[in-house]
Length: 174
Image (cartoon, rainbow, N blue to C red; front, side, top):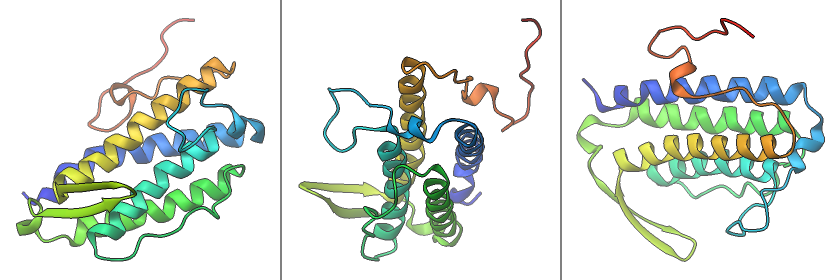
């Protein structure tokens, strides 16, 4: 089995999660993108919209790094426009899926050396792609928490409740 197939379920899950967030944010005040991540962040982003841009930027930039291209400057992507953010996310996802589909099976364990700002990273392609997908999942959970603390009702987005790999999840009583 080609290694790229191992990512199918996580790609499907994060696609499902993005679709749910996109739909949710279509029916929520655009101001929600300005909800604060709180005073104790790491300084990279302070608001939900900035965190969303970060999710999609990381995906795009790792795909670019792994294919030897220069990394994109994504600072012009507006953080106060959900549709623009998700359109950008569509582009970054296509880049990642294209990379996975075209990547030679023999090179998944090849170590890539990268500079990430002031940091040096040496990691296999398999590890980098795994990170990109887990990174997104982690940040959506943070966004859900921020919004809940801001008074927005957010339904569970757990993998167990999604349609990937089958099963069923539904409300049985209120």
